[in-house]
Length: 234
Image (cartoon, rainbow, N blue to C red; front, side, top):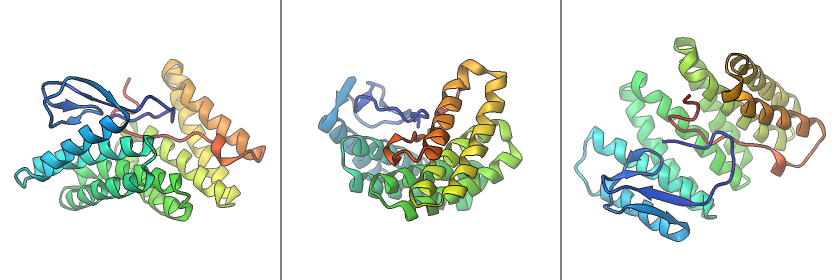
């Protein structure tokens, strides 16, 4: 589930190959080749969800459905279907929550990713208290994962902290917001020292958020991080 860790805006679209691998790297379901945009992207993404829902019940099927739902939620959010996107990613979250209860070492990272996305969708709708609640849940999971494998999960933790700080700031919890962003800055700065080319942009965006908070700039100016399984892959 590849995301845009820089929080940028891109053309809305859904890439499907004739092998059935759908955009964002999740198992696909339609024999179409090419790139579709806008409402057509929503149609194709919903078709992928429908296929997995109609398939046999298995762990593989649940994994495919969760991935297809996540893809659909991203596209719905980008075409302005905010409430639909929240409901869709909420379904994916419930799947990851169930699977992670059975095999936490395998599926907790996916649950943490899903919670970050749920928080973003709540924030899109102005539901900031709910966004804080789920983002804090994602942070708790990532902190546990970092204790086991910092290399794999520390950057995701930093990104979720940066998102959380934005929600806190908009709620007027300024001290907590700056603390969360400062922790994210420290992580990106440390990783950037070893690989400036890969992480300088993330570090700059976090520092821009801190500067905008200190300058009391509007919430629309704050960067957000959409995460995916390969958000920080080199």
